Image 1: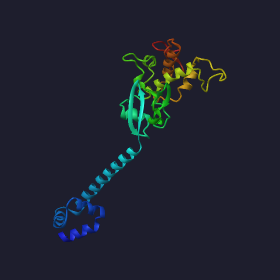
Image 2: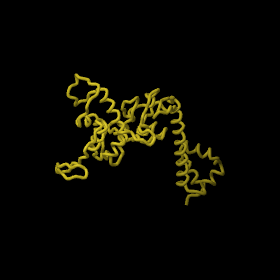
Image 3: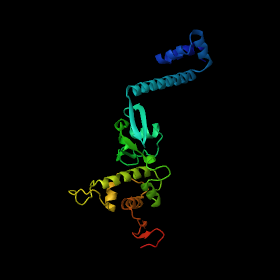
Length: 264
């Protein structure tokens, strides 16, 4: 059986400089150190010291992160849904993270976080942008509109009402981005902005009449993993034309049917 002195010498050979320093900080010296080592096993002491080392390393990392944050801190002032806001944050923080984590506006969703799904789409000065790829610092002095800012009190935006009417969503994860993108697309059509499928790019009419193909092309950056695309197109088309669209359902055999009607 290893006696107390032998165990202490054995432990001293195993401890690192950092572990020795931590024991000193704990106030374990001389006889106290011998008694302490004699009361618990070497394995127990090692576990205790490793835990203390981990805690100190974590504290050092927090301190380093704070220093980095302070080094890169900037102040950004912009209007969000009609309200003036000022934020002090790291210059590398994306608009999406600022909206969700700093302003509690969680309607904009973080889907792919790579600008590929469109779930984070918001409006900046009326133009649609991917907030996951936009730095908050770029919004200085600008007007940002999220899904929370489209309605006026209890009165839904026409695009929101149309999505509900035509069941343009299922799980709803992509819906806020779909609606914001559709609202911006209406303005693009009014301004005569062409798309890849526009028939004549040389003509720039003040207001474009959007076909189903035009709507699909212009909304192609917003993905719906539930596959509610026909309903989304119908909702957008009603808002665009002002005419009610027949709600059609397409079956796997290629037949279609109006809602509540027979298959054709």
